[in-house]
Amino acid sequence: MIRYLEQEEKILTKPLYQEAFFEDSAGFVKYYYSEKIKDNRILADIEESVRSMIMLNPYTISVFNKKYCLDYIVAVATKKEYKRQGYMRRLLNKTLIDMNEIKVPFTYLIPANKDYYLPFDFSFVARKNEYNVDLSDYKKSVISGVKLDIGAAEKILDFINTEVSKSNDVYTYRDIRYFERELKEIASENGFINIYLDGDDIVAYESFWGIEKVELKERIVSSDIATREYGKENIMVRITDVAELLSNFRAGKNIDIIVKINDNIIESQNAFFRIEMGKDFAKIGKIVNTEGSAFVEFAIADFTAWIFGYAGDVKYNIVNFADKSIAKDSLDSIKKIGGIFINELV
Image 1 (cartoon, rainbow, N blue to C red):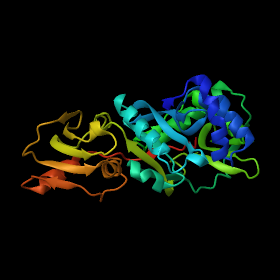
Image 2: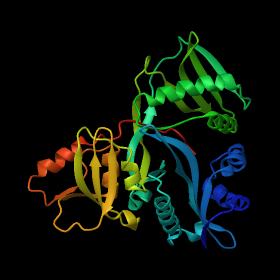
Image 3: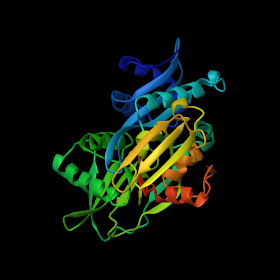
Image 4: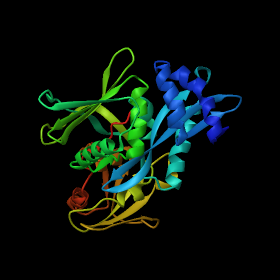
C-alpha cells in the first residue's frame, strides 16, 4: 500500500535507510532520525515492512523574493528484493502529482545518478557553488557543538541571507531554526564552523564535518573579496505547477503568448497555458479551445532547463506563427532565473 506515513510510523523506515545508505555514520543516522523526521513527509510502499520510500524534507526557498516551503527529495530507496519492479516509479509519480494538487511550484534533489531521474522529467538547473579564496589574512572564529548563541547566530544568518540574495533569484532562506538544526547536523559528524572576520564584519562562513575524514560541507564568501565559481552539475528540479511558478516571473515588455507543455506524468499540466506578462505583472491561465491558435510547445524537462536560465538551446516547436521571430521575441522577453544558491545535502 502506498501512503504517507504517520509520525509514529516514520521510524519503520530506519532498517531500509540503513540498508540503502550504509555509508552514513551511526552519529548521522541518530541525528537524522531524531531531528529530520520531526517535520518531513515520507511516502512509502508499506505492507509488513517498508518496501520502498521517498523522504520529502522541507526548506524555505525564496523565488524572486516570494518564500515557499518546498520539498527536497532525499533518501530515495527500495529494498533489494523489490528493486526493478516499479515500486519507486509509483512513489515518484504520486509525489509529483500530489505536489501539483497543492500548487507547489517545484521540487528538487541532488542525484546520486542523474539517469534515474531523467525519465521523471527532472532537469539540471545549477552547478555546485564553490569559492577559491585565501582566507588566511582574516580573523577566524571557530564554532563547535550544538550550543547556540542567539546574537552570534543572527549575525551569521544575516551575512548568509544577505550574501546569497545578492545575485540569486532562487535560494534557501535560513532562520534560527535552520541554524539550530545545522549545528546538530554538523555535530553528528564531529564537525565545526569557521567564521572569518574583517574587523567586526563577517566576510566568510565555512562548515566542516566527517568522522574518518574531515570534509568541507559548505563555504559562503562575501562577493567583496571573492567571486563565486561553479563545479559539477548539482541541483535537479522538477516543475510541479507551471502556473504557480510562472506567476513569479516578469517580462521586459508586455507579452501575450500561448505555451503548450507536454507532461506525461502530471496530466493536469499537460496543457496549453496563456502567459500574459509585463514588467510588473504576470497572469497565467490554462486554455482549452486552442484550435487554430499560434503557440510554442515545450517538453516539461526542456521548459524547466530553459525557464531556470540553465540552458538556452533547448528544443521547442513554434506552431502556427506566420512570423516565428514574434514568438522568439516574446520568449526572450521573459526574465529567466538568474542564480540559484541551494547547498543542502539532506
